[in-house]
Image (cartoon, rainbow, N blue to C red):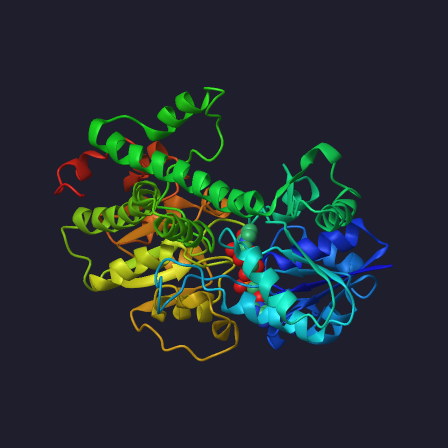
Length: 480
Ligand code: NAI
């Protein structure tokens, strides 16, 4: 029986390994983590992450060929294939701070693998890493190997949170990079054999190590760039009276462009896009390519612009002051169908409004009060360091209340801001909400999900990103 161990039981390690266990009953899969609370949650009925379909997959395999454990060394020692799916955050201090990837967790995992191994192993980079990381890992492993042979593969993960299980069941592609030596090719084949149990062969791509590593950074940069492009257009739409949804539809009909990922919004979030682009920028700078670095930096600049533009719009529309006004925030997760708040645009929008002394009442169907308070008190980039995965008592922001109901959250509010596109926000009783709000009542839709005409009929003053402005908003000071 082939044994797989995955170091890192997070948003990638957990679902990916659960699907491998489900699709490959002859493989024993152990997912290990240093976080005791995370492993306890994986072994309970309340999984540590919310992901549609995940519960069912875990329930089918857990205790049969899928195990979650904190005994990292034992499972690494026994495995034939070791996936490393630990976090690779942005460095917060030292050389490359604010841009470069922090490989502390990766390096310590690699040293531990070298330390405890007693048999040859294939080590798979699942985390997103800077191009050429495999070379560094290879050096650490071979210099500490005590005669044991390691083959390094790069197998970046392309799943999207919220649709992770669907993406893992039917991936657009699986990418495996390895050395062009007979041993390297043998290792690629061994990993290919795992995926081939459910993924059609023509979707399993093999490349050299560096292409695989760079493809992941490139894919995320392209995706984020699409969002920043449509968001940049949304600002121009508001200035000209064009409608971003109509523009996106027309643009997306071109088969060279395609219709997906063209929704304007308050900005992209999630643990990956910003971190991976910053990392790409750093790599370009280090390789003497400042113009290429500058090009990709703009993607993040536009994203920051979009978030502050939204805050400015809210404040400017409400007579240039939100001090002491109750603002309802609907949605805090970075996208629907996940409870993940890492780099969610809601953090910057809420901090912006708090900076103007607003009182916030936040509701999200999947995010806890503890998490929201923690996010609003934490410094940029601090969230992705494992110490924060452990329970801690956060200091709280007194102007913030967290509510478990959209109606409660909007009661007596001056405005409501929709920051996540949860389906339930489309079908709220907006008449009831309007009746219980202060007047004039404003809706700022950061995800373009409400029926603008219907809400205006009710009496709301409505702002929807990239759509023709409400006459009220046109009279207010311009936002930039
Ligand atoms: P995560 O933070 O949810 O999980 C990482 C886990 O690794 C944590 O539970 C942490 O306790 C554990 N860990 C860290 N050092 C460890 C060690 N030495 N031994 C054992 N466990 C250790 O992170 P997530 O979101 O799963 O991301 C992991 C990697 O995958 C990152 O490089 C990320 O960029 C990449 N990725 C993430 C995607 C996403 O949608 N979240 C999608 C594709 C790639």
